[in-house]
Amino acid sequence: MAATSTHPDVRSLSVSSRLTDKHGRAITDLRVSVTDRCNYKCIYCRTGNEGAQYAELPIADYLRMVRVFVSLGIEKIRLTGGEPLLRRGLIDMISELAQMRTAFSVEGVPLASGAGRPLDIALTTNGHLLQELAQPLQDAGLNRITVSMDAIDHEKFSRITRVPDSFNRVLAGVRAAKRVGLDPVKINCVLLRGFNEDQIVEFAKFSRDEGVIVRFIEFMPLEEDRVWTPEVVVRMEEILAALNTFQPVVPLAAKVVSETALRYTFQDGAGEIGIIAPVSHPFCGHCSRVRLTSDGKLRTCLFSQSDHDLYGVLRRGGDDGTLAEFIQRTVDRKEARHHIGEPDFLKPSRSMVHIGG
Image 1 (tube, helix red, strand yellow):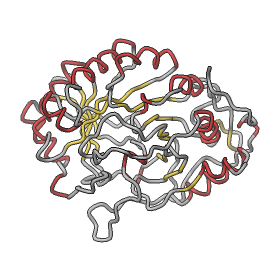
Image 2: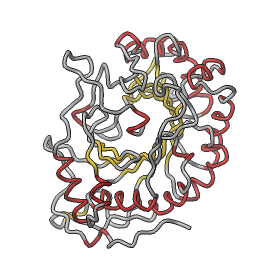
Image 3: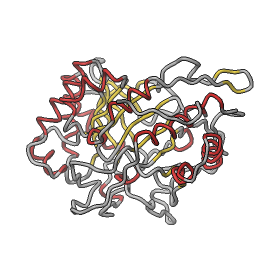
């Protein structure tokens, strides 16, 4: 049975302004981690240690907090983990999200998502369970899917994920997602020098052969093992140089100002490649995102040094108006930018798996 809320409809809230930070950036994207459990132990993320303590909230509580975010103008929801397909109740959660509509206006002007317009609901997964769940996800109302996939070579893939014989399952999941209409499927590849930089051209071919969008991501200092160094990062210029050895790339226009990836196609127009380069080409000035961790903490930046306990407000009996005020105050203090590569840079207080991808 789908989760429901007994709390007042968020449409009863009085919203005085769009969710905007002190730097003038409109916050329209929310990433929600529904678990920090994962069935992979990727070298750039997990330590590989057993016995970790996991954090998950009731689905109904995630939904209540998300409804308040939607009342404040959030237009895009991305469900993450850990590995979100491990989370019991996920399909029902997506069904509930798909029924949410924004019916708010600010000073008489409808919010960007528009009354009656569905939320854009996306999900990021490692793809291991996707083949079986692609159709139920699409039926529930999921719009888009991104699959983390860091090599085309089977042996390299197993070395990175530390899970043997998993590549074929992920490939089958990618194809299943395309088949049921979760299109365009995006593939995220985190590049690490010494592990998979030789896969760049192979992924270019994969994009063209499979009809998917491949996005290369510069390795960020968010791993549990704290092994990040600038030398391990495969930077944007190196990625472009490798792609050009295969076939000349042509830039594509950004679809929205806050887009994280610089987009390219090849000279013949086949295939699409994105490069997400937060280390060498930060895009903080147009950031539109905040994150809700699996234990209900609001994070205004991947590299924040502190959490803001939104779930604590809910647990102490705060009504939806109180939650909205807490969110607005927190977002107003969103950091201007990260400081990767600068002398005063501090790694974030949490690793990526505990923040949400």
